[in-house]
Length: 303
Length: 314
Image (tube, rainbow over all chains, first blue to last red; front, side):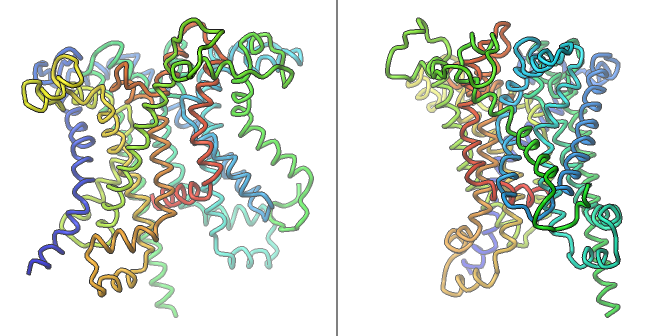
């Protein structure tokens, strides 16, 4: 009798530590944030002492031109980063999908940029973009061209380039894995039917890879909204608000302007956006699984 | 261009040119930092470009001045407390990695192997919280760790801590190593649980049942049968957790005080000053980058497996 009780308790015992920590340090804080977003709250008071203001923080933000600009910058950053990285990453995977000697070394070198600290990535790129000391302007100068004001006039573009450098390998590696797990028979059949390289890519490889590509792209999009340190180190959001993405604005609102309530409301906006993206991704996955299962049934029924 | 399909043994020379260029682009910035960390600021600014300079470890000495056993001639005052921050970073990253792994793989095992009430909720929540960015946690964590997660100084435990460690006010999580570790463990758990699930699914059930026949309890089955079989997954999860705990800046900067600063905070603080000392800052950046680089060079296969498992099933 005791043994069966113990068995029934086992999963909960295994799950308990993770549950306690995640409830205490993730879910409770998230609830705390939602609660705080309805209050006029500054860092010197505890949340209980602050005044309830209803939706005031959300309305203030909605009408705040700076917040809107920040949303615009965030969307511009995320969309351009993800689309360029997808194009480059998938393209490179198609190009390098061959029996190369040393492919594993190549992949190892490619993942270095995403393993090192974002702070360090920001620091290296800030150095390279430096108006006088940096390599880019020095190279331009040595071939007799005008120097470019990378982190001034073209700050957003420069930040985007740095992110592309850091994260294209992610897409590349996932696409390569997808390519290499494609059914050999389909490719073989196409080759026998005389499909050219391009035809194979467009009609066979890309359509078969599409489910993985869509999930990869969505994952990358969600991550693009999390980027903060690289931009903080490179430009601190400036000049003006030109590179002040939402994550950065949240942290500045909390630490510099000391408006925790507004920062909480802003976090909530960001959270809702990301939640929608995640739900979309999960729904897409479910749908794919359902479709695969249905195809399986039809195949089996046919045989 | 030849069709990208042919699997001929000899590739077109242009192809190798592209590969070499890609490698230079991927590693170039890191090599640049490495080289510059051995240059004096004079050399970096004057632009005696390339490799024509006298390498010096002076930057590293300046960075590590607070833990070097000897006095430095070029430095009258040790302003950059890098050594201490490095030790803080190590403690925080290692402890949170170990905790996350132990707790995470137990949870993953429960989610994969047992049917129980609330299983789907637990699994769904794990998935959803994976996407919460650190910036969203900043405000609530700052508030909670400073105001709510505290032990009153008049309680017996609070009194003991105050007597032994000094300080004023209530004893709070903010400013301690444990405070930062707690949030790192919580942040990494969803991802670790997710990755490990996909490894545990592949462990053949018969093995576990055989062990149970021989009289092993659930904990013995887990530690003696399952864990050894998912070592590659554990390695991948460990590297990802360590990487986040080691590299993270935002939450650490909100939660740390003077004595618990980690390396990324130090680097950001020294970057925002107007006159950046490039040589020293590159040396600190290099020191921060070395552990992840070593992991990548020695365990790239595990990293790639983990990345694919974490994403494709995502």
